[in-house]
Image (cartoon, rainbow, N blue to C red; front, side, top):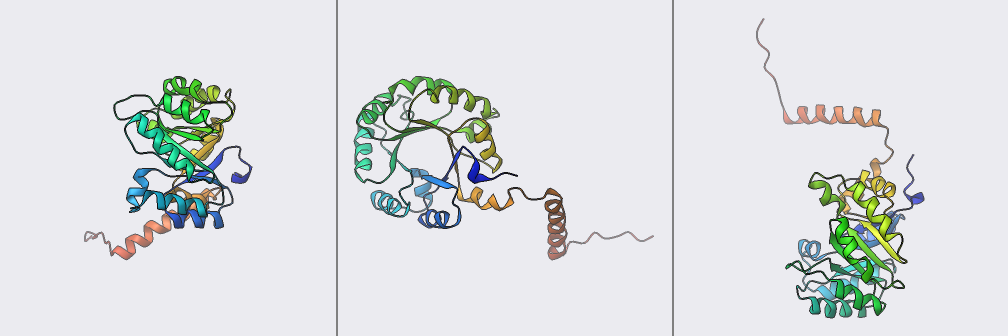
Length: 244
């Protein structure tokens, strides 16, 4: 029997929908924080970035919440990060591992964390990338390293080994948490737990499947058979029998 409240890994909701944030706080006590990104905000039709972020801060009950910069210029990334940080709350500033030219954002990580600004370094896919940035974090500043385990799996590589190796590095650094990002299914929560990840993000559509956790598989099987039968009946499907 899996009890989400007893796991070591913390579950964050990945969304740019304010209603989803509100509902999760009311319905799911195991939600311990939130993440967003420009792509999610675009899909939700967010027009005013600052206004959205400030509203999200108001309703997030001071749980950790990450907002991302969107400049492609390294210096401008740092400027945007400082503005986001000025909005207050328990916010982390999401910084991509590099810009679109492949230039690492190590200077941004160093400068921000030295000033006590919490960062969430995102879009990481490899152990080598973690190795390249790990020494640029100020030890006293809480920070997150987000490895896109789900997308790693999409490439045909099992991400568990990668996450375990990343954990061996991040666990030696004070105040750095390893985040399993881009989850694809409920099982990923167990994967994150077993790979020593500190945090996992799940989207609202995955959160909706929480009700299936620990479900009796024999009951699940019978329900599935009934679904197939009822759908066939409702569709009016009929296989014509040949005359004897």
